[in-house]
Image (cartoon, rainbow, N blue to C red; front, side):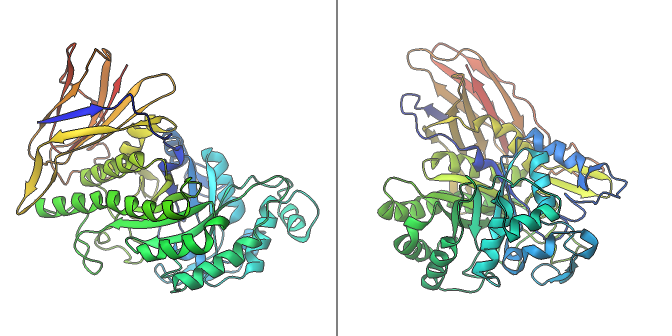
Length: 491
């Protein structure tokens, strides 16, 4: 049993559409054999960009795409990825599989992809192995409309007008793969690099500093104290990892103990954001600086027989619930969290899309993005939840997780998660003084915890109409099946 009370008289912040952002790194088959097939491919494409993936991502209104990394960003030299593709120098992708990167997908291709998707680009610059001048010249190449060496190079490479570039990250994971730096050292580097990221030709950059690894609260403290006036956003990375980093568990072959562990660890995102945001509040009480969770998601062992450096994993109903819980948490903290980027969009980690040659499938996580898109740009409404716990062994977590928002037309959308893999939950929504009478919803669930979409069964987990709702003058009652995600519209 559960009671979910929507506090309609206490509206909060707008839920930024950027919370539903994505991340595409030069890693495994995310770019190559994923988003990019090349213009000569028999797979339908537009200028080398795979058309069915673009269509699928446009359907969930992808708002922003982060590129080129990730760890790859801090060994990427952008000038190697412009000009005639056949003349671009190759490089070794030392982080991800030790494969040769031919740089056929570079700045122009990425921004063409963003144009086709109708989303904003988020570019991550190289601090770890790059230079201030290199990053400054990239911004000039991208955004300057006048005559200059970099603007002239852009024109020579086929693009006359500059691109509107808003989001620009100064390095990635500089506490680790981006240089193994101390926060004091990175803070000084950030101040230096961002100085030379100019606002050119009317373009205004949103400068993003590399933030903490999970619960490294000292990193946030140092960065905010030393550099808050010079940044627009501060990133945060947190992955839900069952087991440990050496043995992460399987994406599809797991028992209830591992089901419980993943969902419990996913819930830690709430405490993590609250603590980092509290530190940010000390230095930025007006909340000018955004917190960007620009890498998040589940991380398991790679699928058997695949390159361990390619991070290819399946995606089950469990991942759909983890994604829904994360979104509910991001909504709750929408006053500070103004972007999030799931890792990653195609064929890597908690992907939206998996491909196998010409075939493509949508994962359960994709369907959560599609169902939850009604929250994009809506006003957050706090919820109070009184529910039974889901207990496993000596531990327990709340059985129900939820968030709500009101859209521009006045309709309320309520997202619900039942984490209990065995028991359905009867949910009551009180309506003091009357309330919505038009109730409709959609449901994502399956018969087993391990259910997932495979190429021979691509619709094993797909949304259906939510049934079993009852409306009275006093309350709305919803029967939420076990291991389920639902989005309900109240009008």
